[in-house]
Length: 246
Image (cartoon, rainbow, N blue to C red; front, side, top):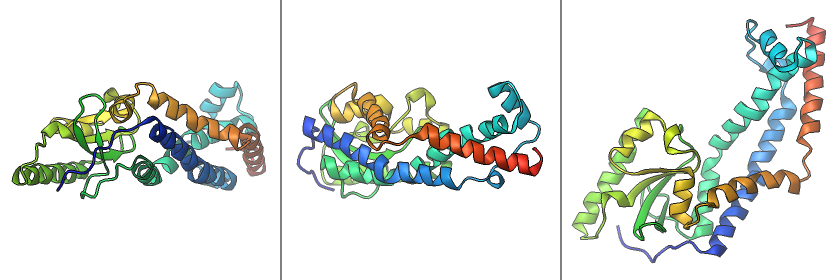
């Protein structure tokens, strides 16, 4: 373990993070999302017969095939599908953060090293996607990595403090952190969402700039999501009709 040159995020790097994030959505998230939408068929849904008619009536005021299709499709394509794709591919975005910021770490268990814009200290950070994205077994692994670094820093006589080893969670807030993260937070800081991005960039609003930029990609790519979803609803509704209902 050795000290590397300072990594203080400047305006050019902030813009590089935004551009990289947009490219992540443009090349990975959106194509996967569109692919999932295109291939959906009625057989792909795990239908609860006790709920689907209620949900259709609640959403649309009736249980016509088209309303049933909407009740099936909306949660899937606007919720489950996109969240799964984001989680499965988040390492690509993390890798891009390492590259565009120039803050990549060569230390096992650490993704980036940066100078904290709040306290001015070098942080050794393991990045995670969201507030519910680690399991119980991950706790021991993370704590083990951090304890090893602390011990090595003492041997190397480096001024490393416990608060210099952090988990950076890319989105969410402290109130949404899982019990697993809260357990880690009793040992090392878990910094989440807007707080994390402020520590990294020094910009309290950067988190919101970044999230807004992701939505801009849809307009830039001229994707008519409303039309695509409407077409798929009609396809699913036709399947329901041909089946004689649900």
